[in-house]
Length: 160
Image: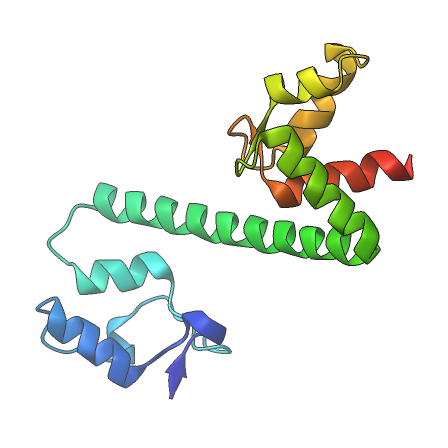
């Protein structure tokens, strides 16, 4: 029997291995106060509190916050990957090759295009126009565009 759904589901055997590894003697479903009876999903903080009974609530809360952040990041990356796939798939092979060649030329065969480099190759565009466009496609907000984000940018600007 599995507890939870999908990739985050654990079997009781897996939970027993985890509990044994962290020094908790044994755990049964009755040890958990908050279990969704319909799905069998155990509340994450409840699992932590049971596995690590000697740790303070603040520690459990910090792990829960990190867990939620990781889930949000994973969802965001998944959505971003779907968006990139759609953009790349909407390019013709010749457009894709052209964008790759432009990117290699603009970046001196680097992996990233920075905003100052983009300004150099588009001196006729004002910073007021260029900055929001660049920032919109700089999905990880590191001040650089990789090839796929550059393709997204080119796709968006050529459609308008």
